[in-house]
Length: 280
Image (cartoon, rainbow, N blue to C red; front, side, top):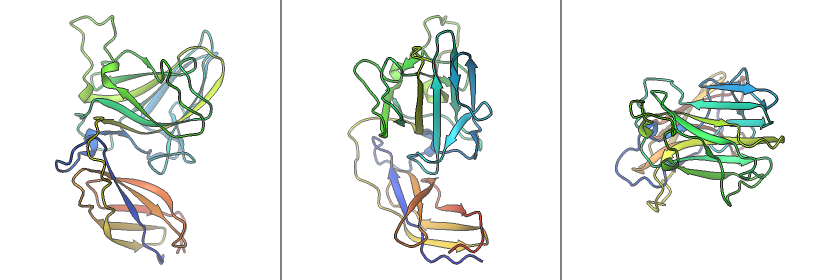
């Protein structure tokens, strides 16, 4: 039996730009926050034409555990764009249950960490598809004077208005519906012949405005029940009306805490799998 010496603190997260108006539906904003897979992200696929290169995990988006914003992992995009080659990799909404789509917001946001500076000359392209497979034009991840600096998490903000239907669409063809987004894809941009790595995390559809900047209070009355190789954590819900999610931190000594998971704001329990018995 496991004995827990310290309760696990939790951090409540608000969705910036969404006014306080009752419960924030998680599925109306979050496209990806973390993967259920230890290998490649199960809801993803890829395409590659040599001599370009693209890292995959069995054809899927590789999962990164050392760099993340929403614990415990992110997606890793590693590529080299070569003349005559092509690549594409797609992250879809994880269909873990019969979730509704109907996204609310005017901007695609996600966090991005680059191993080297990303400029318009080496940036990949981004495009979206909805649940009917209707897509948008591909836009450059950064354009004009924009840059993604190396070694720093940057929040990317791509207005949905910038993603327009392809110019070859006829009036009889289906049109992209931004409330029914099903996937985000990255694809080859200009051919610079260099290796690049991006860590991508916490994809959301949200409305960007000054809005409420008051952080939600952390939940209270945290309880933990220990078992041989895992523990069940429960807590009293944060009273914030604009709560999006919780982040859970674990400590073995009550002093140093590490982020281990993310939970939807409508839920008040989390299971921590420790992998070995006898943990305190």
